Amino acid sequence: MFKRLFTFVFCCIATVALANLPLPASQPTMVVGRNMPKQRNLIMLCMNYGRHTPIGLLSKRFGNSNTVGFSAGYKFANNWQVQAGINALFSGNVNENGILDSMMGSSGLLLDNTGTYAEIRLYERGYLWHLDIGKIIPMGPFNQQSGILMTAGLGFIEHRIKFTYQKTVLPQLDNGNYKGYDRLTNGLLLRGFLGYQLLDTKGKVNLVGGIEYLQGMTQNRRAFNYDTRTADNTHRTDILLGLKLGIMVTINGRETGKKKTEQDHFFN
Image (cartoon, rainbow, N blue to C red):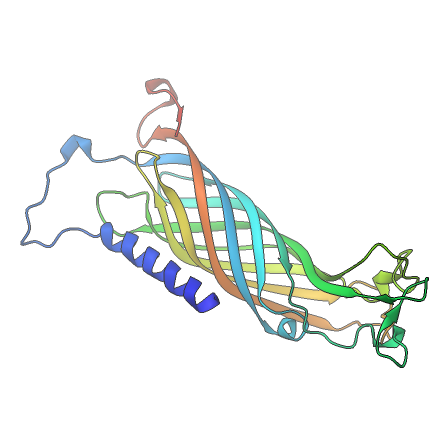
């Protein structure tokens, strides 16, 4: 699934990039003169989805994960931009085994307070936020607001294991006891992104897609792990590498060289 998604995103980015390249010299070109789209300041509101693969220590705890979130950014007329984003992090792939072994009897199953077997499912849950600065490198003369996008930034990331079970009472996990097993981990986030951003001059299609790199400098925040009967003070490097796609709504500011009084602002 991840390989197919990567191939699809790569083809989309390549298609859009090639569409913005200038025509060969042997072909007739249109003289646009005054009609050439001018650079604008833009406010960008983006909904996005990401699919990531964990690397290193994080891969021993979780499998492939998803992110869904929102970002708001401002693009200057010189194609520098700043943005802030927040994402939910989730998956149903937990690789860390043996967390609940200490609660199980000889049968290898958990019992609730009624003496019946309890089925427990484990999930990854978390979130991250980031502040970035980046630059658009145009690929052609006809739309200087679109091109290769490179950004870098800092933020915060948190992840944990969530336990879900039927509506029974499990003294081993209820009343806050789950905190001794959930591996709550958080810390500083480093973020990098390389992709393509398409900002239509008419505001009809605004898309962004590319490769996202997330590196968390994290640590377990629980005082004690009940299953290992030890405190985990390990300084971790949690890495996620994946693909991110977003669709944007833009709010146009003034064109380059114009004052606020020379034109009205409008919404795309």
